[in-house]
Every structure is written in structure tokens, then in C-alpha cells.
Length: 318
Image: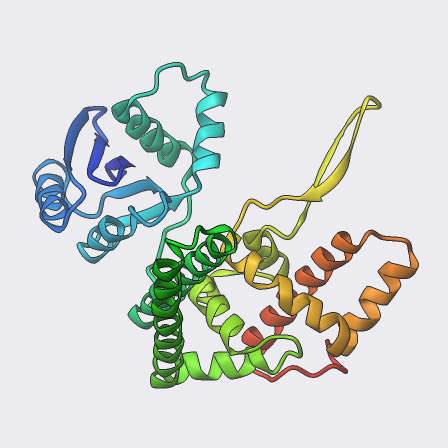
């Protein structure tokens, strides 16, 4: 039996609890920096030795560097859904909440639930993700400044207009960098070409899809990918008294879900299978947003199909 550690990840600090096979529990904290990660790996070598089974939650990117460092050092890393860990804590009637108790909970979750091992995506996929997320941030800033300009006092309008001009240049530069990066790697270039063969999806959306999925092989089915995107129904029913309306789960990749909205609108006009699908839902009296969400889910299925098959979109097979 391997030693197990749970790591509570924060922006600046890592709280660590190590459970050894002989029942001992060790605690440590270190900085969430390259030097802190090296210190953690040395500490693990002294107290346990590789491979250690490591669990840490996905925390908006703060977990990525330490997860990669531990993986490269030969440890078995699992990146966990925070909602799953929180639900597990509730099932254990957990009361206290500190960094150390959070780390201990994560270690216990890994010990009892045996989550799948995380394999880092290739460097070019991680770099693409960084680029598309930077583009998303720039577009959000552009929208905010545009909204401010509408109501701005004359004295501040020149400042906002200068910022918008700079953002316009940066957005164009990042888009060119994304295109050049994809063209540099044959696998990314081939996957991009497969995705844009789907009517309704252009180069920008294809780049976001590739940046957020990282590796299509980690999804076992189109439904698995739809669940990752948060585009599967969430049903609320219990006995005879609870009959809640079904909604989208939205427990998934929000950036990817947002990126598919306008392509779904376009696909309802130009993607023949989805045009027919939307028409059937419309004839059945479904609300517009329900139809759009259903088309987004079908788009995810088409994306999965072309990437896993390696064949361009064929409307007769969709």
C-alpha cells in the first residue's frame, strides 16, 4: 500500500497531510512556488518515497504547477472536483474547516474513493490553453470598457478609448499567436481542421475547444464530454412530492459552454442535421433557450465524433 497525501491548494501556500501505510499522519505547509514544490518533493522522499498517491483539488489553475512537479517526480497525482470532495466531507459529518482539515479530508477521499490518475496534457496543449484563456480575459476587458464608454463622462472618454484601442491590438496579436501556435503542431492543426469542418464552428471556437479539452482521449464517450461541458440535464424528482423542472447541470467547463453559444445559433441555420433537430424541437413547442442548449449538446457530440474518428464532418453520418 502506498502512502497518500492530500494537499489543500491556495494561491500562496500548500497545506499537506501525509498518511503512511503504518497509520502515521504527517503535516507540512510550504509555499506554492517552484522552490516550495521542490521542498515538498524532498520531504516526501524522506518520509515516504515515491510513488506517493497525491490528491489535490482543481482550484482555478493554482494546482497546475505543483501537480506537474509531483507527476514529473514519479508520484501518482489525482486532480479532484472540489464539489465531490465537499460532498464527501458532508457524508462524513465533517464539522471543522481549516487548511489542515481540508488537506486531511482530501487524503481520506483519495484513500477511500481511489480517484483516477491524472496524466498531464502535452506542453503544446497547455500552451494553447494559456493563450485561449488570455484571449477570453482580453475580450472580457474589451466588453467592460465598451460598456463604460457608453455612460462615461467626457473627461474620461479619451482614457477609455485609448484602452480600447490597446485591447483591440492585443486581441488581434493573441489571435494571430493562437493560429501560429496551432499551425506549428501537426496534431493540433489536424484537430482544428476536423472541428472547423462542422458547419457553425470557426477557427476561434475550434481553438477554444482544443484549449479547454486538452486531450480528447480522456473522454470515454460523447456523453462524457457533454457532462464535462455542463450540457447534460439535471433532473430533480423524488417520490410523488418533488417534480422540479429539468435544467442544465452547468457543472463543467464554463468557458467551453460560453464559446459554443453563438456557433449553436449559426448551426441551427447552416448545419443540416442540427437544423432538422432544432425544427423538431420547435414543432414540439420547446422554448428557444431549451432548443439552443440542446443544439449546443449536439454540437459537442459532433465535435467528439470528428476528433475520435479522425474524419471530417459528414452530414449524412451525423
